[in-house]
Image 1 (spheres, helix red, strand yellow):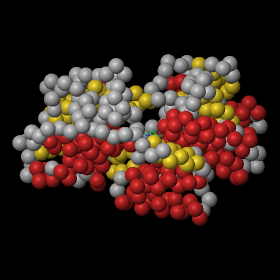
Image 2 (cartoon, protein in one colour):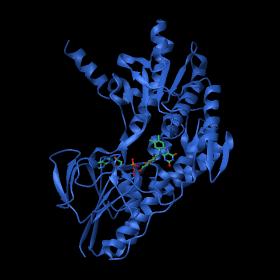
Image 3 (cartoon, helix red, strand yellow):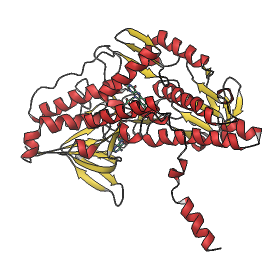
Image 4 (cartoon, protein in one colour):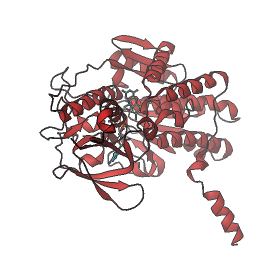
Length: 438
Ligand SMILES: Cc1cc2nc3c(=O)[nH]c(=O)nc-3n(C[C@H](O)[C@H](O)[C@H](O)COP(=O)(O)OP(=O)(O)OC[C@H]3O[C@@H](n4cnc5c(N)ncnc54)[C@H](O)[C@@H]3O)c2cc1C
């Protein structure tokens, strides 16, 4: 056996699959009978459930990512993007971070490229919208919210002030509700340092096309979350769609119109575009067509799981597993075991997991949970949210760093400065050059 296993994507599924393969195939890896490669544009896995806490400044962004090369020393990590999969030829086209694209051959492929924001052709969305899926987006949003408080404090123009202090989030699932709740909590906390801004001056609008928020925690807890958000002064608009946001002028389907500097788009996800640039079969929703064994349907030597795949939920016939971390981590375990069984000519096993419910953070000391039918709200839910995610974040190193961040936050006030200039590091230097050429 001299096999090359190629994993496309180093997120939840990619990292956990590689980790398990590294352990289960350690003898074959040492003997050179097996090689494993992970391709991802980033050199780290992002623990996405911590994005809202990183945006709120409760966690250092470096502590919510897991470095692939350190965790996977027996695996070859390539940084760049897979732009095409030619499974008939067992090759992918790899576009490295710099330089020319090249072909990478493999024997077995694991498609774990996850998802991207699912957008709609709404006028203005590409100009002012921002997603909430990456560390870059979470930190940019944090900087933006804090910067806009500075803008509002410093202007004498009431229009500029109102626009700066209006924040819109579209989509009331996990990502939208958690991002909004954490950022609102941070902004409220920060107003104590401003002379002319009170929490009541900041307008948060949550726009949701369906009639419910946070469906992940069930109807009862979703209803409670809705009441909670409204009690906090958040304008939650259910059954409402964003119609346009050209130049920051927001128009909603309920007829309301207002200006906003910030619009966060979290209205769903769709598979990474690489699935369309492959000869692998897709299902009716454009995801890779998966079997319960986490193979790509009707395709030898190809496996898939996570947000990019439509995995049948064998505990709920006719349904698919939801795109969440709970499934992704568990699928990765079965997927890795099935890759090993496939290499050894053994029979594959099915992925079977009944969704156990969810926990969500709604700001410091506030949360909501519905796990194994146990419904919690407020502080106990928040505590459960933190302990659950702490137990899940990969590596002891990260766990300790997360606990240190949280502990420091208990004793010191949170950092409320915008470091937005980090996004344009050369501007100061350019301005200096301009003065010497005057
Ligand atoms: C803000 C937020 C909060 C969340 N909170 C929760 C929660 O509390 N509980 C929960 O269960 N789930 C939660 N989720 C969902 C969960 O994070 C995802 O379901 C999970 O990350 C899916 O794992 P994945 O491996 O399929 O994709 P990802 O973890 O997204 O990994 C995909 C990887 O593939 C890489 N990639 C993409 N395209 C290519 C390409 N062409 N070539 C190479 N690499 C590529 C990406 O860079 C990425 O690293 C949350 C998501 C978000 C955004």
